[in-house]
Image 1 (cartoon, one colour):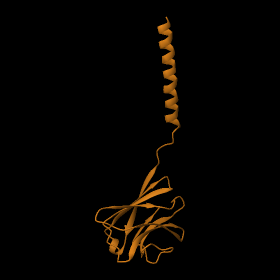
Image 2 (cartoon, helix red, strand yellow):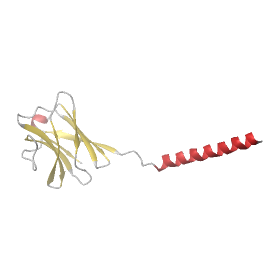
Image 3 (cartoon, helix red, strand yellow):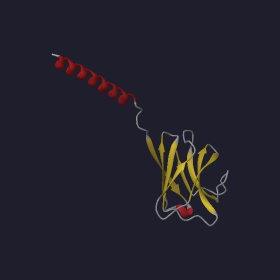
Image 4 (cartoon, one colour):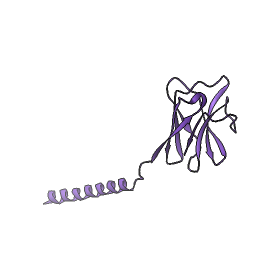
Length: 136
């Protein structure tokens, strides 16, 4: 009889643990929603394949393939654009393989994302027309 009572008690404790775990799983947030936005290239970047993967509007990664090399003493700079206000974000240098750059500014209120050629180290305002641009 003691064995049956012990097994019954142990079973009840285990069922309670399983229910607790199920509740924790149900209460977890849904996985982040991702959105892909393709950027269009112009000029020397017409054949570039570029897209931004947006996670929850506050994290994003720009992925670029076939980007031509930047001129000497220049770099590519990502801009997050809200209305007419471009905010400087990531810098990147293209390579033979695809490049990924973390977009450092939230995109929750942005209208577009763009890439320009800037002086080495980046700029506070764009100094050239965008080579890549995508509407969000």
